Length: 248
Image (cartoon, rainbow, N blue to C red):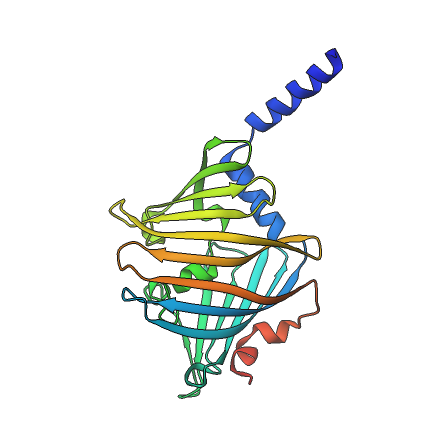
């Protein structure tokens, strides 16, 4: 009985010693259990009158040596087919470089800092949302935790580094994935809410399969539904390059 009590005490101390950074590191480690993934994603965009636009894209990502590179390539409908977005991390800084390829013009454009804050293909995600942020860009505070969730508030270390004044995360303890994220604009007003409502285990990795981003200020919303995903497959570095960006 005494031994059990001591074990419970140790576990309680360990849980209370968790920091916001510890929790967000768990989320990162879960997503990077395997170094690669490829997914087919169905994106549905709704405007404030509930009119919808549908997009389909392939998504590749690869982790190595504390960096993440990814490529999104649209294949339906015809008017966006071939449009692609490449995101490359810079392992020496917090920055992430992004390029977009527009097949109609056969041109590659590197996105500027202001471009990254624009809507991604008319959706309620920005290009910077797609790229994600490095843990070192924000200060992460554990607000509270319950039996099921951690509650984290992340604030940019440099105010001019983000269009958000803060992001509040609800992290699942069961899966070590983000269950919800609430984005606040620079005036501190609630701007968007991301809800991840379906998680599947693929090759021993907990993966979000269904996401909805709601924009509270425009009344738009975007749904990302992962139709299929492979994890731990071979992905050549060449694919996650300008050459891969332009390939058909």
